[in-house]
Amino acid sequence: VYAYFNAFLSNAQARYNACLTALDLLQYCKKEKSTINMEFGTDYGNCITGTLGSESMRTVDVLGSPVNTARVLCMLNSDFRTKFLASSSVINNVLGNVIYRTVDILPEPIDTVYQVLRANVMEEENEWMYSLQKAEDERNASPDYTFSSAVRMWNKSNIAGGLQLLSQIENESPHYVDETFRVVKLAMENWLKYHSVGFNIEINNMSLYK
Image (cartoon, rainbow, N blue to C red):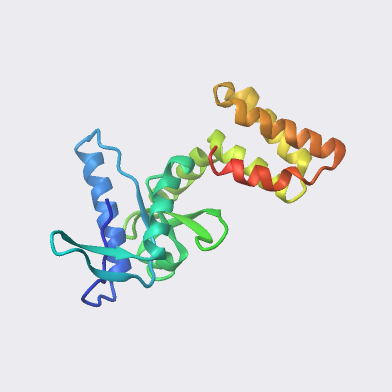
């Protein structure tokens, strides 16, 4: 399901309104103890908006890169164990209005990925700092994040550091070790032993599906 803001009628607050809508829905589900799992991704940019279809059936739709990017960000929530991710084109417009943190840096067109935590309302500073630190600790403890960090270290030629992180996963989260994990570890060990750069592109592709 997707919703779009700033279509048909221009709205300078479109990106902020999109953030508030997602945050309000998440807050509602938490308050009502809903079993519905909601995850959000938001991006901003130029799209094609209008009526599509034939004489027998027509629908209003939106096409463009922001739609695809928002979908990817939404799907990445499961990897980062988050609920609401936004692109830099959104965050740069809502600075000071929402509390957020940097999650990761991905290849273009997404670039930097941010987790939107909440609206920036007046409350005790230590409370939101605690929430920020808690979210950071949970992310760093995730085997998905540790696995991604190990692959990034490989790309930066820090093979020993990457293997150390993989060993950490084996010790702390043995349930996470599967065939993909074993292939990645073996490839990194072979790279370190034989300096075979041929594995690099293959691992980049595999990490997308881990």
